[in-house]
Image (cartoon, helix red, strand yellow):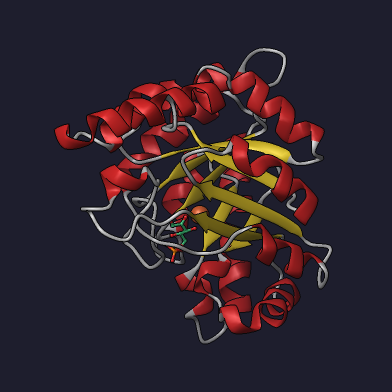
Length: 266
Ligand SMILES: O=C(CO)[C@H](O)[C@H](O)COP(=O)(O)O
Ligand SMILES: [Fe+2]
């Protein structure tokens, strides 16, 4: 059974005090620190023009680099960006531990990100770039991530079928973690989507030892469902940072994963 890992999402922390917030979470029993990297398209109108992945802008490699100076903790970086390959080197240098990119940034999905006819020329230009950078070459992307000393992971949005990550779990350079999004990526504090547990269950049956991370809306009221489905890496932002006793929430999340794993063995 893969070890339970509780990863508070620093998106819900006080960014102005990131180092002490990180330390506080580790003292409270966090195993990893989850860092949400978002490229921000600001408005729906800008979406087809900019080709960014999510409607929010958060942090980049300089912040990871600064935080790294204050902690040796595992920095679990979730990259909600269109061109992950562009970020591999700088995140490696900055001291990221895990590098999780989205499976949707393949050529077919990029077309869906921009379906505005007015932008078709620009779209085709971007498509060429994206194709060259990432689309047909997952193996190369994963190899690069590993070569920079990071652990590769792949994430999928709620609308993406689980089968789409299977090719990335095979071959010479498989990813070492799958992040199943349980909210639409972009913001903390959203409602957990229980339907996503089918993906977790299917993945756990097929890959008993794989790290399976769930992200979005996890907390005391949803953890049992996620743990029973087979998730072992739990991201929790608002439920931990918003709690009167964050240590108690972290402990409850971990106990739930441990108990669900014991129940599976028995
Ligand atoms: O990737 C994310 C959003 O895109 C965050 O990691 C996630 O939403 C965590 O926040 P919360 O636990 O409050 O839902
Ligand atoms: Fe995340």
